[in-house]
Amino acid sequence: MELANPSLDYSAFTARQQATWASGDFNEIGRQTVPAVEALCEAVDPRSGERVLDVACGNGNLALAAARRYCEVAAIDFVPAIVERARRRAEAEGAAVDFRVADAQALPFPDASFDVVVSTFGVIFAPDQEKAAGELLRVCRPGGRIGLCTWPPDGLPSDTFQVQMRYAPPPPSALKPPTRWGTPEGLAELLGAGTSELRIERRSFRVYYRSVEHEFEVFRRHFGPMRQMLDGLDESVRAKLARDMTEVYERYNRATDGTVIHEMEYLQVVGTRKA
Image (tube, rainbow, N blue to C red):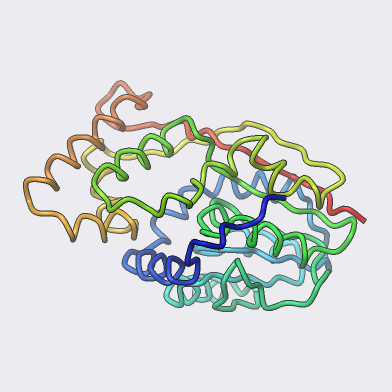
């Protein structure tokens, strides 16, 4: 595993990230990933009574899926409003989940606390990737399973990230992209030394919108990074960003009736913690 860059102030960048993600309503975005989450739950196959941790849990999709199997489930996210939203979902469903506000780069659990440790499109955004990967490994017991859903560096999510980066202040040059988690090479660097097996499968799920304009509106209103960025742009630049984003949406659209269907390609990763 590579060492983190000592010149980068990860704590300051994490604090800025926290404010960014808090500015939206992630539940509207996270609920669209349910097919991938359910597939990952099947792949790591937590059994009743096993201890499961959902890292960067978002709206709690995976935590709830594990709770339905009568697992002992804990879930963390570093945005209090996101954790509260997930807690309300669990209460409505009658699911017992130990939700906590915590950072994926410093998990508040002892070593080897969990049989299964998972993260769906969440831990990949931690700025100190080596630290976050080390925490996943640390809290998983020897022989336990680590499961991830990640975005690869090609495809719709990556292309929309690239558009947003043209309008946002540049990140620190030492910061590695979240899509590093979406390549076999990056996963080997981050998790390979701590796992005896790392199974990587490229999969996809579908998402649906009424139109490309509706898709942009959903992300403008609910996706924290997009909402905060747009708030800092003047009207003419916001209009240009909207055009650039909807062009990407059109390029990936599989529908022919004026609505939107996207085939969202991602990596499903299942590792076995080295004994």
